[in-house]
Image (cartoon, rainbow over all chains, first blue to last red; front, side, top):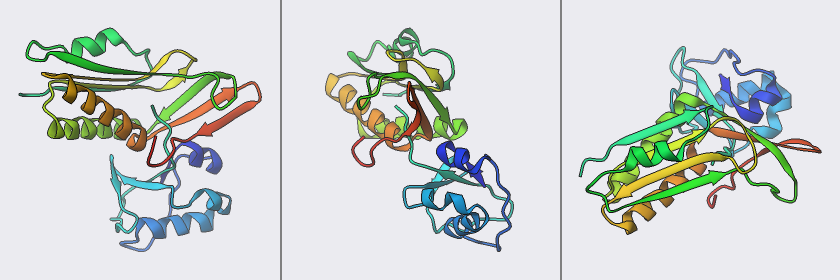
Length: 78
Length: 144
């Protein structure tokens, strides 16, 4: 799992390996992340978006083996 | 009309000259150009500097998608989208959107579209530094 912006700051890491069941969704990955880093829970609400590769994906997308899920907190560009 | 596109996410200072050169073409009667700069004060705080970080590969891909969407919606010539990352001081440009088109209505509309979509979708994060510390600043959802 790859974290960005305030999420990476709060986790103290930009990359967190997580063991997930096959075809786990992005939502399930977030639940696993909260179990591992409870301090992130308040930040992992509906405002967080997901990406795989360089594209947004929906929260119910199943992850393939070895795929990296990106967690994108609310953006501030411009 | 065959549009051409240029998308830049860079830690180097942005250049208006590069933007206008990228979009200029003889079959277009105008260029709409939006220059976003770091504002101080912001929400009552005197801003010392901004630090932008990005998921750079995706930011470039997202800018490309936005540019191509604009070219589908309006009859436009070229699109130039650039976002600065790293440290930026008040008054300095953080964003340039430039669109050329045969007619101004399409240029204005496509430029506006690209600015709004970029603020909503580009994976870029902003830390604002002031005398009393730093904070993450988010774009408001829906209406940036």
